[in-house]
Length: 326
Image 1 (spheres, rainbow, N blue to C red):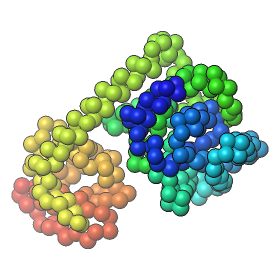
Image 2 (spheres, helix red, strand yellow):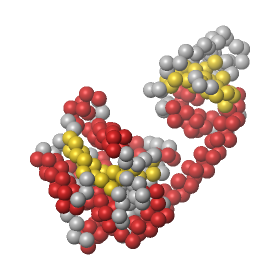
Image 3 (cartoon, rainbow, N blue to C red):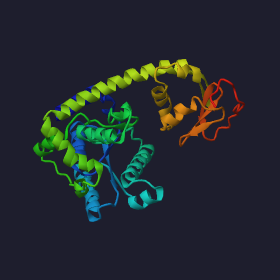
């Protein structure tokens, strides 16, 4: 695994070799393997550990484990703690989402303060499969099925190609130490339920399931790339103008497309819109009708749709045109 990791550093992740990087480490198997791979490969890495205070003494023991490891290996380590449950309640989100938000905001602050160019996380191919199945169960477009990106801005996941089996085998051979998270066995969480119940069954049915899944995601990523290129052509056809305050779409051009609803989904999803039936209805509505996302408004103005930010002042012609549907 070390040779394959170092090969990936040469091909996919050469930018990591000279950069100061921050490795997100929980103390669990996956992150401790990533730390060891980085050390063995000579990366200029420091550690970052979050104590979410969700497992009492066990959480504190994880933090102490990381501090001891960093001291023994002479690696700089940053640690912090969060009142995650209280934060989740105050922001009205799940504990998992709250922890994610707190974690990545802290990583960004460390990057800004200490000049780390990249943050490395230990997501692997089994995590990718779990995310795929979660998105599939909730209903998603193709972008929800292409999985966890290897590179997302300054977030890099260099062991995404490796499976949990490969990671455990490496840790066993290298006699690495890690912490077991008891909450990983709690199957009330969807991800854990998939990990312990559904995915083992899929692997039993097809022992090469992970490899087949990787190929499927490669095809999906390639299809997504083609789709993105084609959408640029569609934007040239349906966008009348773009200014600092708004984007103007030609409704007549949109309606000439084979599937206006699908195209509107691809054009408007980046702006937070999710109700595609409502958007399709807007194409034939009276001037002045509008719908909103959390950040933008989409307004019918005679033969055009105006996309603007929520706070942007827009004048709309609400006079009835005989060509508009009542």
